[in-house]
Length: 323
Image (cartoon, rainbow, N blue to C red; front, side, top):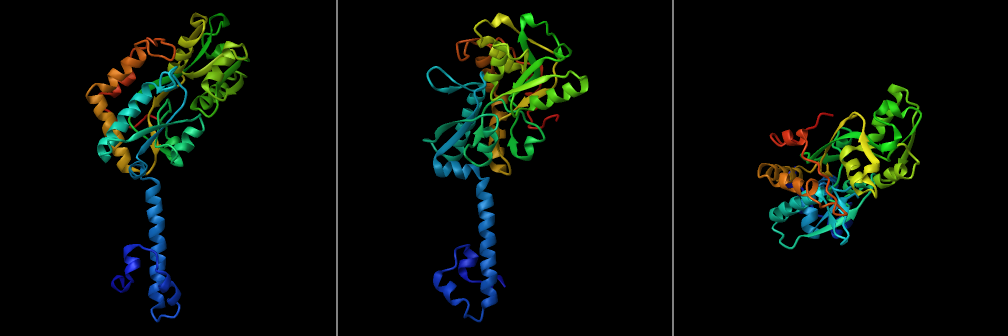
C-alpha cells in the first residue's frame, strides 16, 4: 500500500491545495484518507521530537539559555552585573561542549533569572536550556526533568543566632522555623515536626535571602536549608559571628544541572562533559576557586574544603542518586 500513496504523504509534506480540492471526487478516496492520517501522525511525532531536541533548538537560535537562581556561591549576580558562581562555571563548560559539538564558534550565552518554581517551568517549556544552581536531583523531580552527574552534595541543617540556645532540632519545640517555598527542605521539616511532635510554627520565604532575613530580624528562631547555603549566608552577614550552623543532618542533597527530559542526545553530551571535567581535574579546580578563595559576592571566602561524599563520587561519576 505504501507504494500507492501520493508523494506528498511519503515525504511528510502538506497535501497540495489542488489535491485537497479534488480528493473527494477521486476514486482513490481511501488512499487519500490514509495519506492524510499518516501526514497528521507524522506532524505529531515531529513536534514531539522537536520539543525535546535541545541541540536543534540551540542550533536554530545560535543561543544557549542558562537559568539561574540567586544562591551564592553556586549562582549570583556580581557587583559588575555579571552572572557568576560555581554552578555557572560548570554550565559554561557545558556551553563550550555544545559549541564544539554544533560547530558554532559564535554561540551566544543568555541568562534567565528564575525562582524556586520557575526554575522547573522554564526548563520544561523550553524558555531555558539548562538550569545552573543548587537544585536537588531526586526521584520526584526526575518525573518532570532530567539531571546529569552531581557536582555538589549538601545536607540539610539550620542556622540560628549564637544567643538562641538552639543546638539541635529538639530545641525548636514550639518555636518558629523558616525555610524556602517549593524546596525539598519543606517536606523534611514537616516530617521531623510530625515525628518529634515539635509543634513548630513554619514560615516560608519566597527565596533563601528572605528566609535568612527572618532569622536576622527576629521573625524566626532558625532557618533550615542546605548547609552550604547557610554557610554562604553566614559569611555574607554584617556580623557573621552572630550566627552558627547547627543540627544533625536531615538528609543528603545531591545538586545537579537540570535540563529537559526525553532528550538522549543532549543528556549524552552533558554527561560526557561532566565526566571529562571530573577526570581531567577541571571540576576540582573550579570547586577550589569558589569554595576556598575569596570569590564570593562581597569577596568573602567560604573556607569549605570538598566533602568526602563529593570527593568519593568523582571516582565513579554517575547521575544515579540514593533517593
